Amino acid sequence: MQIETELLKTCWFLAGPTACGKTATALILAERLSAEIIALDSMSLYRGMDVGTAKANSEEQRLVPHHMIDVLDPDEEYSLAEYVQSAEAVCRDIVDRGKTPLFVGGTGLYLRGVLRGVFAGPDADWEFRKQLEKTAAESDAGYLHGELLKVDPSSAERLHPNDARRLIRALEVYHLTGKTLTEQMQQGPLPAEQRSQHVYWLSPPRDWLYDRINRRVDQMIELGLVDEVRRLMSAEKPLSRSASQALGYKEMIDHLKDECTLEAAIETIQTRTRQFAKRQHTWFRNLKECLEIDVSGEESAEEIAGLILNY
Image (cartoon, rainbow, N blue to C red; front, side, top):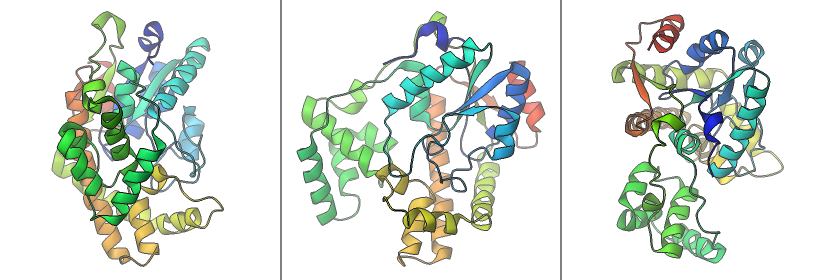
């Protein structure tokens, strides 16, 4: 599955690690490009998950139309292929109205899927999945990640050890096809004449970014992350696996289940978010389509937007 070439060429992209300043820059870019923003974020899709995802707020959405935000209930799952399919429809609508699609976010898997297309893979083997889930529940933490390391080290390095859903899918693909998910997802970049020439990612200094991440997590607590997670846990339908494993939410769920103190949960969120930012950096640097925009952390959003437009 792949977005039509001529449509893809009209799109702009602004990616980068969490907390690097994408949102403020994107609002200025959207104004100057006459663009509408498409969220490139796997967790902004969920309604009611607002504080912990740092999605665009109501004022930001009023300034610039946003898409692919609040389209799922927290109990629903959503695949990469579904995202790409929906994104293509949104892009077509934006272009038909004379506007420019501007993808903004930090989910590297979604960015690659939009730029290069998606390997759909074999149908699910539900019995195999149930057996893996059962064995994982009876084993030490990290069992699934360890099993994937044996057969597909590249996918294991890319996936978080707690991301059970994607770990199981990678093991399932190998079980059903005899080939690793890495082998089957090796779509290279499209020829230069077929792809967007406007794919940028912000690359700030690591120390500056880590400080921003720590302060953002503290701010999320002040804005009510604990209460938000409590509401989600008390909903009639349980959180989907994806939603319950989201950064910030998993740790708060552990806290609300009395498995750790609030202070320990906050520290874990900060640590895991810094680790996630490091993985994002690797993702974007390894995508040949992405043009790295070095920022110092001292620039204003207007200055960063100017750097991109004058690249």
